[in-house]
Length: 361
Ligand code: SAH
Ligand code: SF4
Image 1 (cartoon, rainbow, N blue to C red):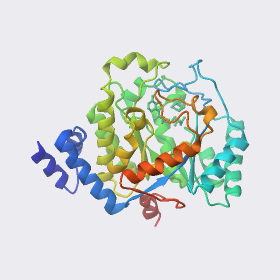
Image 2 (image 1 turned 45 degrees about the vertical axis):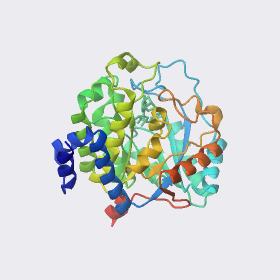
Image 3 (image 1 turned 45 degrees about the horizontal axis):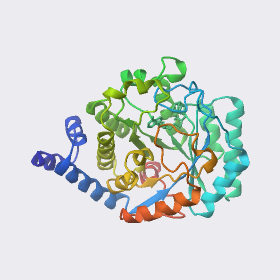
Image 4 (image 1 turned 120 degrees about the vertical axis):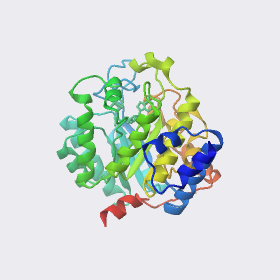
């Protein structure tokens, strides 16, 4: 088997079958894959890891994705909305601690009040940080006009996971209606790119019914879309969701974890200079999950700087780490862990996707 793995890894370009084989790597084969990914990482993006302070500013959501703990119909969630001052305080924290970038994430809403509020926050964050803090947003599906408006107001990166590129699977994990439409998600991703954002996408790994072939197609989709950033994490079942009923057909958690690392490693080899995030969900399975991802291709990490009082209410999945910690604990424990993974924190640098910078030239 290893012989075969070595042959694949020596190729300039992988075909579909190669990717399927790489994603299944275990044991010695997996070590070879990781070594190659690490080599590409060090050569093309270096040792640096960039922080994006994550602010989960509201768990109010209009949608009902079958996998997500904060879906609209989960009545057991205490809904919250941070006030402006709390969001700005988190932005100041990120700025003072030289995080260089902030990620604003929330449940999905598309009412005018929400759109204008985000707009106002973006302008205000730019103002109080003298334009120094980079802003990524992850606010779901919106109209082209809204994406353009938020871009104008200071957001320069957008994260919208495609979740899975298998349309049949997409339908199985979402309600069948207009606000959960695969085509619309694609439209959004294209609009985000066209408007000029650094575009990020990603998938969940280990969804019920998902196959290695699906995952290989997901990676090829990212390459074809020529994305700038990616965040992929294991799917983790949540009791209060419809998909929980399918937990018996899931891969064991360790497999979901291991295949997620393979996805990151293969993507790093396929798209050498993009930014890849070490998703927090990795840490819900393995306490050193994110550090392991940093060793095999990931170069971005998103310390949670949401005020602690609300963290417990933003549980997309169960076993979410750090929900009791204050922002400080997270920052400190992280930098240590990053050094342990043989990486350096790129403090005070935006750490834009090199892929994006090259694409713009
Ligand atoms: N509402 C926005 C942003 C918040 S959700 C959106 O949906 O785009 C952010 C991500 O959390 C989703 O893209 C999804 O991939 C992930 N997520 C949701 N539920 C999850 C679960 N049970 N396990 C792992 N990841 C999950
Ligand atoms: Fe809402 Fe996003 Fe969760 Fe879907 S994944 S229910 S859009 S927060």
